[in-house]
Length: 62
Image (tube, one colour):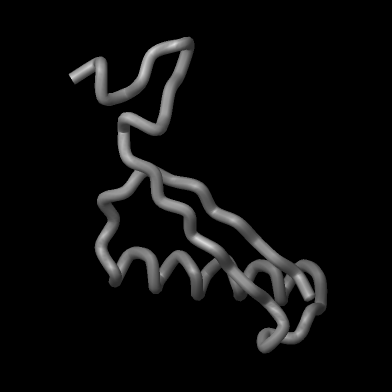
């Protein structure tokens, strides 16, 4: 059973997340041969104060 975790900044619409999950699932099925029913996708959304690049939180750059 393939598990895929997607970590991204919060702010996408439900429509965008639905499309993302569908396309990731399709890619996993196509590349691994796994059954569609066995593919699990997790979306972990972060706020800008929980995400940093080069020692600086994105929320501090605003």
